[in-house]
Length: 283
Ligand SMILES: NC(=O)c1ccc[n+]([C@@H]2O[C@H](COP(=O)([O-])OP(=O)(O)OC[C@H]3O[C@@H](n4cnc5c(N)ncnc54)[C@H](OP(=O)(O)O)[C@@H]3O)[C@@H](O)[C@H]2O)c1
Image 1 (spheres, rainbow, N blue to C red):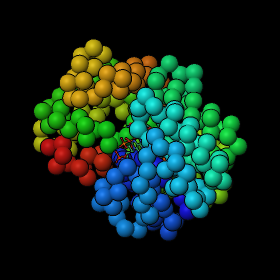
Image 2 (image 1 turned 135 degrees about the horizontal axis):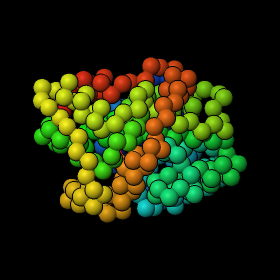
Image 3 (image 1 turned 45 degrees about the vertical axis):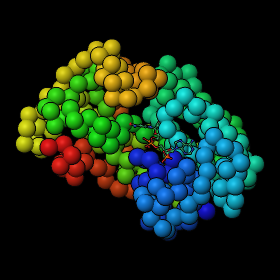
């Protein structure tokens, strides 16, 4: 039995589906059972719980031998994920795949990379078998920019920075392989899409594929933060996202890896494919 947390989220849903398609038995720990049933269907075992409630985690771990640890970027991520690792150890779980982030490092000056890096250290020290899944920026983040794209201008403080955006279905293919095949213990996989792109490249793709002109406009970090907080994003999250844009400007996310092909055993989805599939959202 494989236990999955964060199962109803952007990355969690395709991971559950990828494991079910491999005929694995999957249990999800969720806060909202009805929502989980709607988005995940009836092939999955749904357990009510909360990562802030250690007793619910322990109960969900009965008969579990493998787990996928995933939770949102939030100030309590290290505490919640550390408690999960302690519970997994007590419950006799054998292998934990941690959903992490590109460049995870406890010494990073970027908040998300630092938090995930601290949890990775904790998992490595736990004695459990582990696999680190370190995806770069999701293609699905463009859904949050759909309004800007439809209006014709992508505003970001990323300069000429490049990143190899990855579709969450490709991350899911890698995650499912690591949990259902032998040989992935002790590995840290940097997971990227197939092409490293600037926002100018991306705007050009949207122009080519929608029926309207889309351009990219670099903005200051202050303006980006103001826009994000006006959209309801917390100041903490907005600062973390700006740190990623700073990283884009510094050119630290440019590398394309072969993990989707080598581990996920599939051709990585291109950004053009992603836009084409979702064209009505962006037009
Ligand atoms: N976005 C990117 O480009 C990117 C890139 C690399 C790595 N990441 C990492 O990816 C991870 C997941 O991101 P995501 O976008 O897939 O997340 P998401 O869509 O926000 O989903 C979060 C999931 O966690 C669940 N959850 C939240 N709080 C919980 C709690 N206290 N107990 C149990 N479940 C809880 C949510 O359940 P409910 O349905 O109950 O809300 C939901 O299923 C983050 O750690 C992030 O750092 C993101």
